[in-house]
Image (cartoon, rainbow, N blue to C red; front, top):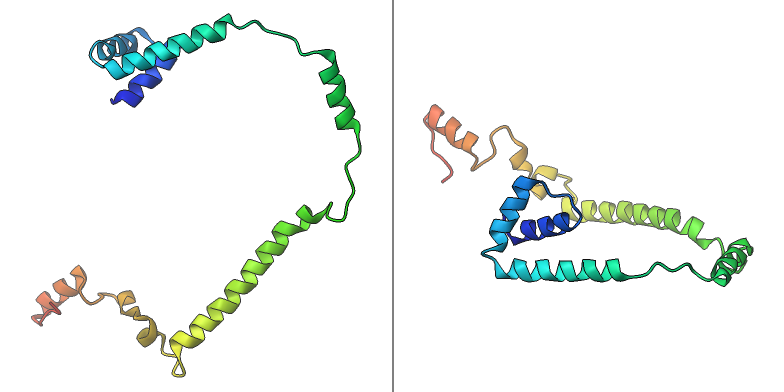
Length: 148
């Protein structure tokens, strides 16, 4: 375990979620790690400050303002419904651009002869690609030379 794990245990102890065995492990670590003791002191101070806060009810005017704002109809404007169509339109654009770009790449890469093996170097799809362990084993078993 590292200090990150022990710091997580410090917060668990503050919440009362740490069992006795892990509590003993945490105390042993805190006795030798100054950085974690500083972290523990900060957590305890923060917890004490939070506990000292007084719960306050919001003024009634806030609730009235929220209810009035929620009940108001949505603003209608020139671009009010644009979000409904933006994502599908962007997806269609990306799809069409990908198809066009893929076609261009295929035409420029394959060239006039259309030989994909020569253009893309697809020899790695063979049963025993050149330079692979399978190629070496087969060459050895057949008594032939290797590429290396």
